[in-house]
Amino acid sequence: MKPGTIRRAVPQDLDAVMAIVAETIVEMQFYGNEQWNTDYPNRERFSQDITNQSLYVATEGGEICGFITVDNIEPEEYSGQPWRIYSPCKVIHRFAVASNRRGQGWASRLETYAVGLARESWIHYLKTDTHCTNLEMQHFLEHKGYGRAGTMRLPGRSQDYYCYDKILAIPT
Image 1: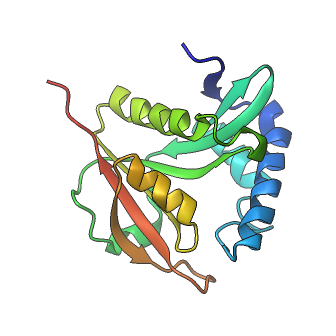
Image 2 (image 1 turned 135 degrees about the horizontal axis):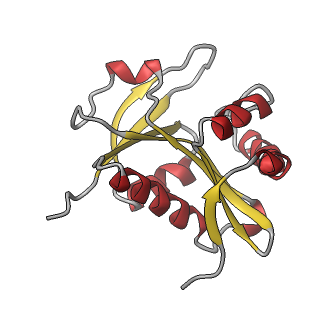
């Protein structure tokens, strides 16, 4: 078994989560990616995720290596997208790995954890989105079996977001 664990986040994790957000914003801005900025995602959003028990953190040796939010809440903008199926789903939001932990498999482990959360709920469908300039995330999602389902524009944003979905195999 690989070292480290994934668990539900607690309020004491917020500082570490926000430190990962801050470094991710700097990196995104360097690449012209406006997906995250100083307004989103913010501490209040993550506090709400913790209250809703939908934020999960990957940890190793007491350090938070990354995080993922997984819930059943579809953004309003998802309603007009040509999803492959229309059924209950889990939605992945706010997903990042600390820069010093990239390349160690944490993103894959967090995504696999999201798949497990869906299956535990007897849900066989995942949705997410990413910014059109976030080529690394697009490649990651496609590598993990997600298909591009559409394009949307979020209010106040000047560039598109790509919607992705993944149909999970139904256990026999």
